[in-house]
Length: 205
Image 1 (cartoon, rainbow, N blue to C red):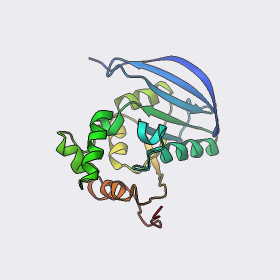
Image 2: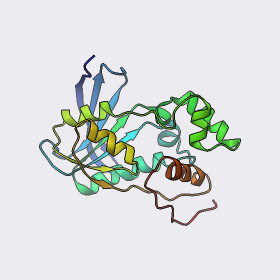
Image 3: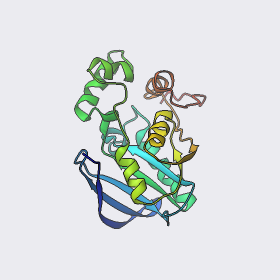
Image 4: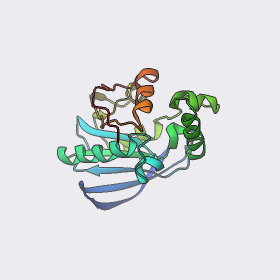
């Protein structure tokens, strides 16, 4: 089946990081509701700052300190607002693709001593099951010529390039780490090759 998506509605969304246009997409791949927050005129543009953010209910909505997702979401919107042009694609692939139930089960395993990678594998999943076909289709729908990807994840860059996206540069996005997420971030750096400096001061609070 040929992957297809449709841009069904666009609406203005004022945020504390400025005003965006929210694009709602339907697709025939996973039937989920993926969206893109677009700032400024991006069609036909090169070197557009783009963040591809995977859903994280606990971090994005509840402000959980177990990960850096919510902070990255906020920081990416701020980066895009300051640049005056850019896109944040919000993909509905919770828990690096394993879903909310399995992610919460993985949290319990982490509390018993496993890291985020080993916990996923123990539950019968890969460390990262996300894929970026929908993101590539959205970028093509928006007619962006090339992007500067806001990420620490080299796999994300490689996958987008394989899908025909011109990724010309990477913009790092590191948040402060602390006692609740330092092990999680170290596992991503050491086992998933995320490009993290891990040289910030470790907070005990």
